[in-house]
Image 1: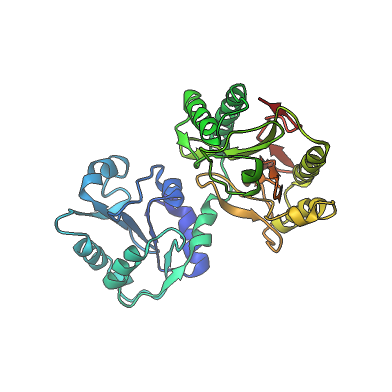
Image 2: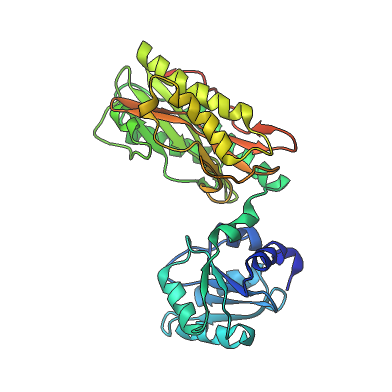
Length: 372
């Protein structure tokens, strides 16, 4: 096997005593092969054994692209293409026949949060004696420590996002719908040279901003005094940004000022204390304590943050009870929020652990801002 390419995943297999790992398109696939494919109704799957070369099961329409980036023989022992008319069953069976060392495999690792049921069922038929193990967290651990190149690409995605947000807020006016503002934001993201979007932007005003994962409305027009929460991110070369800022439209009440400042204080605390050696739970505890010791304690609803990279949500999860220690190269969000019936506030930044401290990768202003 290609030691440089598969060293990390081989380490996972050794630690978990796995005899093989199966990967489908997604963040782990892109990390290993530097290219991703669509996850669709046609299964594309790679089987990496602990001993011997990997094999791939590939839809015929993807073969030319697959062989360009991953030539047969160099990384893979064999590639098994399949056509829509014939179906994929025989390709799975042939792949299993080419891996006799796995016929009696007892520990076969899967990306349980990524692989679909029909793919696992096809594997089960091909390897009837296999015991499939949920190895999703362990497999994804190969993405925990970001390289200098990966951090550079995340920074680029963030810079595109921040430039797009600056341009968007200049166009916000009283009377616009959340959908209209979202359309402006999308236009600006792509006009600033994003490859794509990390996720569908959340643009939520007034009571809709009280929903942490709100959907933009067409029938509500923003009004003076409304909170306006915008949570979004550009994607650059597969790496994602994730930023949230909450604005107020035209004016802000004293009560909303205090509400906002409480979230800002929690955000500042999280960025201030982040450093290698702390656990994810310790950071969440410090951030949540700011919210819980305020008059708005009953308005807190979620953990402090999550890892960021090829996936928008990945390890490490910044939440109480997570004893995972933060180490150099980890990238994650600090995004405390408060939510009540009349509206919500969330302020989200991205930090990376350095050798002895942390660096905040987002620079968009955090002080309370009036728009429109």
